[in-house]
Image 1 (tube, protein in one colour):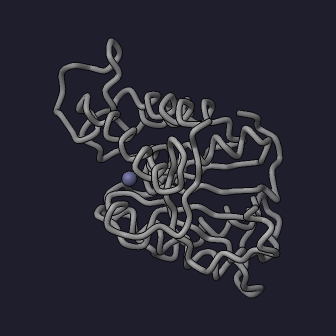
Image 2 (cartoon, helix red, strand yellow):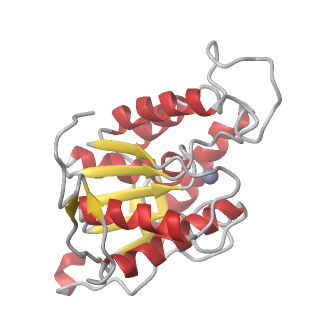
Length: 249
Ligand SMILES: [Zn+2]
């Protein structure tokens, strides 16, 4: 990853835990970076409560996955895994990130989710995005006052309840599916990678060999809905506007 000064980026992908974005929107990230778009990933926690691996190891894995996906930068806010809350501290840290990168689109965890951290992450972003546009909320970056910034282009990827809710948007990831899977396999402490993963240790939903097949089945399911091989589903907070119907041609 390049360590340059970044702002006015195209998309900010946010996850409560390292691997949330890869699992649900990794193909969409790879689609953007392949086009040369500027993408930054933000993880709220290090996933230190996870059954397998450690916070340190997951940070390293996250950095490897970011490189595979081709994003410009990946940062970790170090908030507490399992206890993520839309409190003032988390919201202010997020406002600083939004004002620093000024993303055109923000992609985040969904509002209604099985893991409470995912719902909390959603609430943090929603709250931070609104407040980030308020002139009277002052934040600093390296001692300099930040400008207010807000985007209405907020979308959620879909996680545990992807099959029980209707997506607003489905993105064709057929050309990026391999890159997505490669990024997911960078999490060797979490998913089953033959010859690399530790065969000992507790078994989790992700560490079963079938998990990667399930991910593929899910991508095929959503691909079928729009007539392509693999796809990822999303929900939009506000209606998605087009300038002209010709954008769909
Ligand atoms: Zn998660």
